[in-house]
Length: 141
Image 1 (tube, one colour):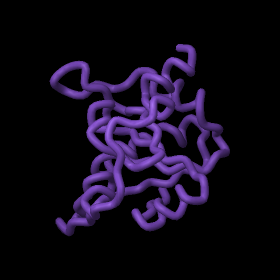
Image 2 (cartoon, rainbow, N blue to C red):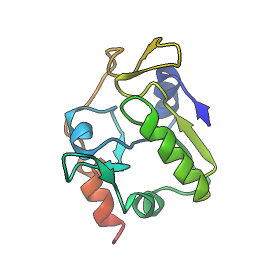
Image 3 (cartoon, rainbow, N blue to C red):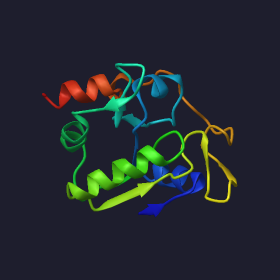
């Protein structure tokens, strides 16, 4: 898996590479990277998160398997899992913003700040076209 820093993500987005946020709908609406698409790996229909049964089908309806894409989540674990699932489905060029939106700790307990923790620009709510509800409806599931 190829990890990218927040600086690299900012440059890649400027180049037109899509960023897919795999956090829950609620997390996405509370704040996300500008121009991010939301396809949650997990849903919060119950107090405990459950897998999104439509993750792969919605993802594949909008993104080509040969397209270069960046994935991110809150702290890196969900995006790593999403990349594993997408690689198994045939996606080739996936990048992981491993520090995530909030930041992550490595095996030694050292904190790496994520997008929001660095004070970078964020959006709240979001463009309808970037929302999971819109992406799912367009996937015709």
